[in-house]
Length: 341
Picture 1 (cartoon, rainbow, N blue to C red):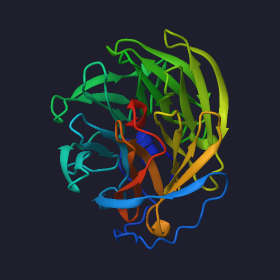
Picture 2 (cartoon, one colour):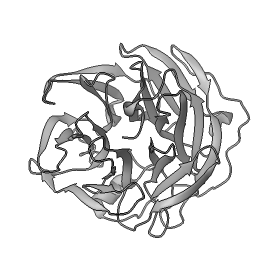
Picture 3 (cartoon, one colour):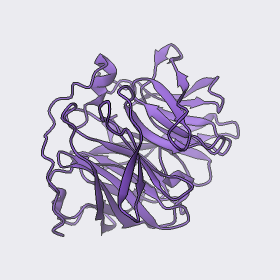
Picture 4 (tube, helix red, strand yellow):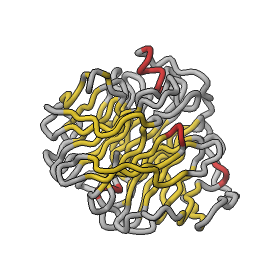
């Protein structure tokens, strides 16, 4: 999860409530005036275009926060609203062509921070920052608790997730975020939910996580250090090495979720700025994805989904103006690593 006050769900884990503070309630439509200032650093600027508004700021929680965009097999886009209160959609299905949406699931408990379909059983898996991972049938029914409880004697704050080819889960555990301590972890959970193993620890608020294009390692973002680390894995999914791969020059923004396209490029979302930066696997900055018009009232671009086999990408963007979908043309085609997590 991200730091306060823009994204105060970390407090939820500590006090068990949605008493969110420090957030605006302006629900006005951010302008698309095309006045975006070119980004600094190497690479070109790609200006995303607004698709639709999905949510407004919830009176009960003082904010809205879209996350976890992932494509279903029918081509619809699944999105979660982390801070939606009871009775409001927490999981949303979007027809991007028709620009329509409908609720998939509502409940007053979960703080769902990511979504992804399993290659093993086809179910939709959701990370709940309060400490659980749940799964749903594709229609949103048949809810099941896949995993909960402590791992190596400590509870998890699961943020994002990635699946390997066999359907085992790799979870970014954002422990230590609210305390400002480097207690984050990467946890591997077998596809049956029976065994959990800590692969890496002492990380700085682990957030984004994605396999590289060949499944040889994991890219992970550490929010409070603004860096992307790389964990090389062996054939059994154990870590063989770990190093800092990219230091993100984000200014006041911090590293959020990560996606990877068919060419192995990394799409690093930014919390605190309605933008995303793109790097190749060697750490070279290729592009900055910007929301045009300076996006008044939009503060964070949390994640992206790239159409499987195509280049059309959909970015989740949120702030006091509400929760929006924006679109742009990705640098390469979408693959499993380009969706959800």
